[in-house]
Length: 509
Image (cartoon, rainbow, N blue to C red; front, side, top):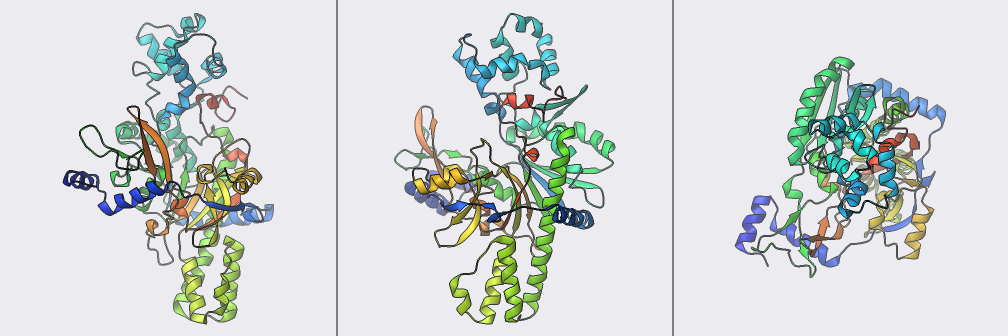
């Protein structure tokens, strides 16, 4: 199936022919649905904390967090085109009336967006008067200046570089808000704050320039030192595009076509980071300073919980490495596995010898750890916490996207309908083992949890393969804790009008 030209192209891309053959097999089999048994609920997969325990865990954070190297990891590659979809579709329709509700709402409150003054100045450079155009209802021209290159070029801009918030005469991008927020919970004993942003190659220079322009100001303001790194998605994690008949999709000159492999491909970027603990938070999930209190408190809580679990795990692993423990002590470790991580022992465990039991428990504990904040589901259709059975019959807690569920199956649909929480992408992870060595994260991926979606290229249908999602199948074999956190810690910006909500709008008292 693959020619010498193909092999050379794969080599240049950094992809093994064996990997492509595995991709081909997955596309032929289409999506393998995740078998969801039931939603994770309070006291059945989701940890809920009383006030006394919250204070205990926050104390753990205050005592120990500063000695750890904490890195905040922010996927920031996505373009903001979906954020401005309503404006874009209205403009492309080229019909002035009727004005869609979302577009009408945008222009009614256009003066309350943090980018308003920048837009006004850009238009003035071309002799355009924003107020006059609003009065004439010339919305097409205004949209052009918002989205097109002659103006703000927001249709091509990543969310991280868009002005989200205004503080008097000061405006901040989403990128800056992540810096300001991280100071409060990710500062080490030497006053260093570490952040890592994954960006698209075409936007790397703009992020670097923003960093160079603004970081000295924030370092002086907070009396800290920022260590900010950027990385781009590795081309070796791209996946081959396939035609409708599941053969490799090719250009007219016979070249193979590759596509980004989804956010699960960022596991390789994650694996390259040197850190004791690592936060994952989406670029658009930020808020104004006056709403940051809950976010900061619960970030500290997630770190404190991770420290609590990690320290106990390391104690057990060190004990098991150095001596053969008694049946009673192993029972205590088994209870900890069940209480902390809802992991039950297989029936065969009881029939094994003492050394075999210890080896089993050691392997179960010697894995990366993640503590994930979960918020009450409202209308958000995204992924959530569920009890899942894998093809080997093992039952575990997993974050599952709705696209991974066979909703044509009534049982699976009922599980989704009964779910009460969803995943806001609020994770803190432990990446090193009890000896201080970084885990090889690819060893803990469930590769059966890939996605196959349909796309078009130049009007031709193709199949696109995405790697297991970063906090879904890519972390399938991690030790997992789900903890309930308040909805106030979640304020994403999916559409531009979300910036008019109180969490983002300085004009709302």
